[in-house]
Image (cartoon, rainbow, N blue to C red):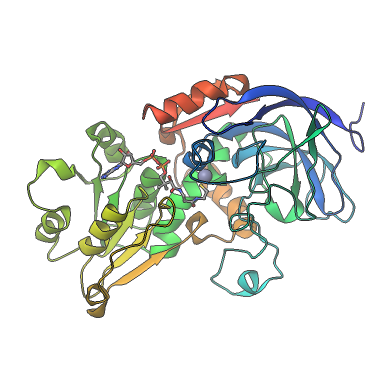
Length: 375
Ligand code: COD
Ligand code: ZN
């Protein structure tokens, strides 16, 4: 029996208070309104930014259904929706692509003005929520809210992907993989034969390493305080690995000595001021490009002496790997299907959705790269 046009009752992981576990509750998911789509979730990754909400460093209205890295199947569509239909496999996009704003119309920009990151309203575009629980409103998160068996998104926040794609793998293209990989191939534009250094070898940092490798970098130096991360970094393409504690000298001096004065491309994938400065100083003062991928907490600022850029260095940053989301995600899925890169090295744990709290514990204990929840 079709559920289109009806309220669906299903299970969702609700966060009611900061620093508390999620509670699995029965919620009502209203049908999609105009230009909206209701999606049945199949798989959802747990990303560090979801935990940033739980610990209070990314404020968003509560109670809320989190989750922004996922894949599912369209259940029904609202009026005016033309690009997806029931049964299509889709990936939610936490940075939408409206194709009408000044950013979408710019050939390079990807931070669509309709994004939910700058104003965390906890609703969809029209200012309302499609979720209720025992008669009370539950908020959306980043316009995605994927920790629910069903969710409603705007059409501009969905990419239709290859019907043959394994959703329990390609869900990572919804955030972690694309953020890292794109930072190398799209933002830095890593060149063949170049030298690269990647600070932070978590899921996003490993995806940067994969991007550097795919772009043909000759040397890829991974930097992490946790040496347990080195084996996997080598597996996905790092040619050397360093721990900052292993030398009395600052990392940038060690790298400068190893790489003829500095690398061509450096990446900060941790979200710390000190490592952002180290990464910047690791790249060559005359032609190096340094990309900030990690988001630092709160109102901290970089102690940036302008002289560091005067010789010709470039410092840049991007969200979602600089990819225009709706255009790029189907292509990234196609490249995965063509075995241009692998996602398995990033997936360390797979858990049923109901065990979401276990998945977050694994992340906090540094035991997982990515946990994929299956529905
Ligand atoms: N020096 C070297 N390595 C360090 C240091 C240090 N001082 N501190 C921590 N590390 C290492 C850790 O051992 C770990 O291996 C790695 O850094 C960080 O990895 P994870 O697993 O914690 O994090 P990732 O890879 O999942 O994500 C890291 C980001 C910084 C990219 C992420 O937290 C973030 O800020 N994302 C925001 C970017 C974004 O686009 N957000 C929008 C939605 S996600
Ligand atoms: Zn994320």
